[in-house]
Structure formats: C-alpha cells, structure tokens
Image (cartoon, rainbow, N blue to C red; front, top):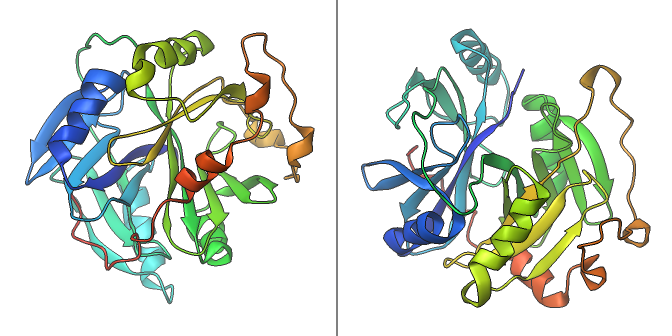
Length: 303
C-alpha cells in the first residue's frame, strides 16, 4: 500500500466551537467548512483541511486520515482488507461527504480509532492571514496499550516503514518525512500529541511569542534527535498536547538508513536559540502527553 501522507486528524471536545476559535484565533488555522456538527479547519498548505473537530463528552483523538495516490489504490486497499482477519472496515469505499469530497474508506485501528484512507480530495483554495500559519499535519503520536499490534498494523497492513526508535517510542515513515506516525507503549489508548508543521524555525519561535502567557509553552524550544525537527509543545483548550515543528529530516526512500535506537543521553543542543534545559521533557510535560484514558470506545461513524 502506498500511503502518501497524513491528511488530517479528528479530535473530540466538549466545546467544539471554543476549540475551533483557539485554532483559528491563536494557532493559525482557518475554517474550511462545517457539516453535520463537524468543524473542518485548514492550514496554509494544499490540503483541504488538516483538523476536524467533533463534539463529545470525552476529549480524545477520534482518528486520522491518510492519503492514497488514487481511487484505484483505495479500491485495492479495500480488497486487501477484506481478506485480512482482524481488519474492520467501518465504511466505504465510497464518495466522501467532507469538504473537498474525494473517495475513501474508513477502517478501525487496533485501539478503535477511525483511520480514513482517501484520494482525489480537492485542494484548499485561496489564502488567509495569520501570524503563524501551519502548513500541514507533520505527525501524529499515539499512546497505545497494544504497541506491538500497532507496529504490525502500520507496517504489515498500511505499508509504513519502521524509521527509528527510542526506549519509549517508535517512529514510522510513509514518505520523505522522517516520521508521520509514532507510537508509545502506554497503559491506555490516548493521544500523545499532534505536530503541526510550520515553514521555518523562525515561525516556531514566532509562535511561542504570539501564544504568550495565555498558552504556556510546556516543552521547548529545541531540536529532537530522531527526525532532527525543531519543536515547541503547548496544550490546547481541550488539554491535548500540540506542537509547532519545522525542518523535519527528509529521507531518500531509495537509500533509507536502517532503523536505530536513539538514547536520551545522545541529545545535544545544536541551535543558538535553543533552551539547554529543554532537551528532555519535564515530568509535567510527560504527564500531559500520556493523556487520559478514553480513546478505546467503539468508533463512531466517519465525519
């Protein structure tokens, strides 16, 4: 299967409008539409929308969407899934009702989240102004009590490449970006964080200044070892951890390096603007990234 990229993530919140206002007024996204109670937000890149917000009494990551190169690839995926025990198709393949339309199917991941596989989604049109403008979802990091099964789901079912690992996390690649999905073993299923890519390091630093005391920085700014990306982490109003990131390492997929184990003590400060004390997350940041139990409910219908 030729997954091309992460299209978007779907998050649930008790007050979707309040969360949408945060992402528009503070984070740098723009409204792309609203249908059947789902709010769609776009970034500055070509993707029609990169965040979906649904209402729920439980804060959770409801799912995420992945790109496929065409309708034939969607149909081929559906045919392959139909012959695999344990793979649950929730809907499709069919025309999509979300803004941008397109064609896709939705399957359940090993923790019950929705994973949409789609193609032929119309690109975002026009532009908008923002102090910092995320261009895409860089990566989604998931906490799972079934991390080994999730590894098989990503690599054996969806065709991701195992990129690298740390003692507490494994990274998976579907294109030139070092990683698009990462998985942390955890006692419960939850969102670790969503990373929004911005064009340059200056945008990460500008984002910290723009968010100010109202949206405190919980980790960063600095640069990771795996992926070499610049990072700054915050908490959204629904308490999900979100990241501004830039300069993600690009991998030549024809000559990709073998996966390696990165140890925390290998981290180094390499940028003059970095905060040396932020090479590793604080206990408070780790607790925020562990999240709360709640992602393991039976998946809802696709937004």
